[in-house]
Length: 162
Image: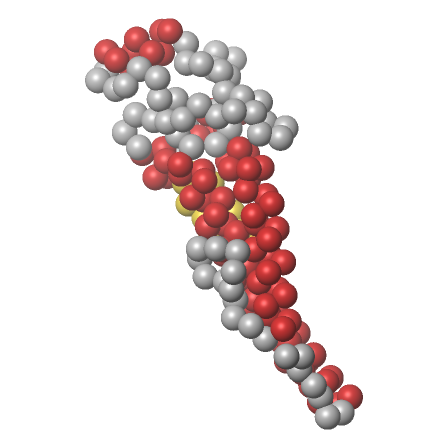
């Protein structure tokens, strides 16, 4: 049922309250969206990735890399996955009410993301962000709509329903 106001003053007061509490709703949206991208990024190591939007598919591991992996006791063909350390290194951080960062402090992560002269790129963060962009837009839109209409915000796990 639509909310009704007895006067313009009551409506103005309602809008003022919405404006004051909007940053908290924005933070809920950003937190949930970052969580969706983070979960996707953590799931990527160990799996070849198909082309996704502007991101090219991942090339097969070089035969020398496969042999080296086996020699060191790892499976031969799970790109970016040996101990799971890289996947666990991906974290999210809220940097303001309207923004978050998803990244890794693993010093190898930029080489994997962008490639080197001897290794093709295997973008984890870009792949996760591109793949989850529609979902993050839904999260943001639904969270702000819920805020403006007086319904609860989203939790860290977005289901599409509030």
